[in-house]
Image (cartoon, rainbow over all chains, first blue to last red):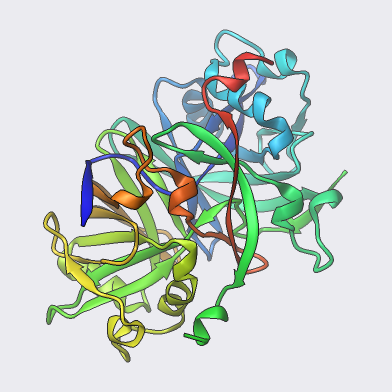
Length: 188
Length: 188
């Protein structure tokens, strides 16, 4: 028997995405968002949803470009801080001591110290209600050598991304490998 | 120094979502998708992206309703199987022995044995390329008592959702609690 929890934004897992943009004056800003995900394979696209009230919303409308920097567990404080404050009032890079790097693909900054960054040009902007969904075409993904495994692909156990729980508002780490996709289901 | 991995659909984490729909004849089907996420808080909306080639795509266009059943780790084989086969050729519920339950909120079935289900009515359909993004308004979320914690909210450590890695195509489990959101960042 299932218990009704109501009409809520619940999903497991949700990501912790640090969105990088420049404002009209060229000042870099970052904010943390968990409403988002991959939305198309060809062209490769990722969607992130933002409230109009955010500084990033205005920056994104203006610059039509953003990055997603993925923090590892050891940057949990900085990632959380990026979601607690507004770039209108504070220079979040200066406050955290992290370093903005200008993307070589889009007009947006990313966080140098974070191990994976995704560089996106804005291709769609969809008004849904409190949030606007921004669809970015991925022009490049860059990763620190330290999180790349022997296969040449990102090793999620080295990356150690954060996972956000929408209801309890907590961050969790990544667990163990439990199976190979498109394979383990063959042995039902 | 970061290494370029190219223009790829990479994001960490991505979810494992089992999408439930009825076909025109009322036959229940499920497929597994990892391209999706929460996209709006008010109204509460979740987006999932599907290829036109899938049976679910046609069902969703027809019925304008879907559910998302979230498998726990112990259903990894069934969840993977749901992404390996097409409902056009096979009755996936019969093959796996899992039970379709008609949602009391939308014209779509969910997987009885999976611990969390999200019931959505289709509100937007956005053509992005190979994938079409379907935005569903969440009408209810239901969870087994066994995954609800003392707070009355879902305990992700009891739920044990799967996490999919797009490049290495593996499933991972959830890790440990690493911090409280909107709090740990105050202590920079």
